[in-house]
Amino acid sequence: MSSGSGCLMWLTGLSHSLSRMELPCWCLLLLSCLQSLSAHDFFTSIGQMTDLLYTEKDLVTSLKDYIRAEENKLEQVKRWADKLDTLSATATQDPEGFLGHPVNAFKLMKRLNTEWGDLESLVLRDTTDGFISNLTIQRQYFPTDEDQTGAAKALLRLQDTYRLDANTISTGDLPGVKHKSQMTVEDCYELGKIAYSDVDYYHTELWMAQALKQLDEGEESTLDKVTVLDYLSYAIYQQGEIERALEYTKRLLELDPEHQRAKGNLKYFEFQLEKQKRAAEEETQKQKERGKRETSEKTKKRKKKVSNQLLPERKKYEMLCRGEGVRMTPRRQSRLFCRYYDNNRNPTYVLAPVKQQDEWDRPYIVRYIDIISDREIERVKQLAKPRLRRATISNPITGVLETASYRISKSAWLTGYEDPMIEKINQRIEDLTGLEMDTAEELQVANYGVGGQYEPHFDFGRKDEPDAFKELGTGNRIATWLFYMSDVAAGGATVFPDVGAAVWPQKGTAVFWYNLFASGEGDYSTRHAACPVLVGNKWVSNKWIHERGQEWRRPCGLNETA
Image (cartoon, rainbow, N blue to C red):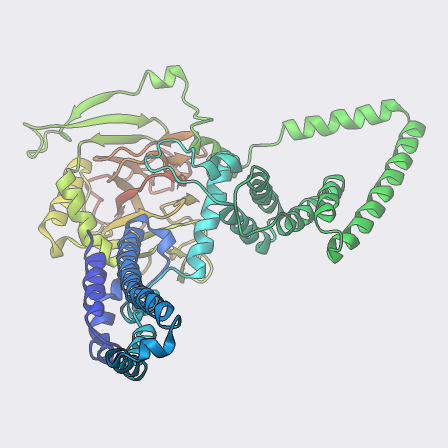
């Protein structure tokens, strides 16, 4: 359990034993203890989201305590009612005879004067105190609307990248899942609404259609088909499919004949369809007049133009994420090897060389196997987790660090002087690469969130960014070292769209490549991306190595691109 979650559980237990009057006395303690959770952006880091599970578990415990208290109170009231029900039934059969007994008369006075007052106090007793105070305290550290929207958009991103239909996601049938979870009608509707608010009618249609499908299959829901059909027909209309929009509108009106918007839409759609039909007839007539030959020639030209178009980077990126489009020929594959490596007989590795394998030839990417232990991984995560903050990018125009939708993760920086293990890891990178670490950036640890990704980018500063690393004074980023600190059940590959390369996460390994040629020119084939995590939790750490200090370790070359 993380320190954040432990702190929450301790505070919750404490809140059970304190009254509302005592709460202000320990608010400062609470705030200081929960500082690590105050940044929000939970959806950008699975590692930090685990704290929320413990928070929710503790709230459920608190809720159960409240239920038990209510049940106990109701049980006392029920016993009292049953006792009086029997007594009053007997007494009202012969009121004078019953009260002729002096004890019965006394007990009646006592009940009405004292015991009914006690019962009133019991009924009015507030058993919600502990639960409400606990909920109020923790609610300020709950995910926000931004988190909910971010997680929803992550599902839509995963749907597109990995070509998943809405039903596959809704039923939870994802590759590598351990804990299958199904979506309700309300869940599907919420996704559709978020897409709708983004004017994303394509996804609105997919998820409203899924909500309707589940309603048609008999799933119980607080939502009705009319509401879903209203969104669905409009989303389809906005995509230009008026005939289908009309069909759904008619179905809506069968359920609710007085639906004013649907009645208006029905007339409008029918008018538009008639208009389209007339336009199509006119176009057909014009084509006949121009002749079939001219039409066929234009069609051929259009087809030729489309076939010659280059595949957009986004498509190449998504294909590689799915394991498609990897451009490695058998001949090139035969030139990739694995070996035991000691970096020119480095004293540390002469007797215990490391396992190294070639991942790609151009750019040259190598992977080191079993290069970081589970113990080291856990220590790095332990140090990083309290410091994780939403990952930022440098605005190329202003130079200001800002968050971006194409980088969904949280990161932290670890220095060698704060823990001997970090220094040991830095030294290992230096021994294996032969590059100076004194001018490198600190070890960056990243944990990806829901659908966590980092779209195609360069690690080095291009010529149009002369001031990219000016404040560091260590030159450009000459190379990248990337540790994989977790296995990922599905997705999460590191891909290089320009060359068709894909490197998959493997816990305990690291990959290394040069961003600059020996001449100092940037290698544009190193443009890479982190694919969205479909299933699992992705932890990585990386070291960006800079030019300064490498003058004698990697001498400058005369060939610009070698």
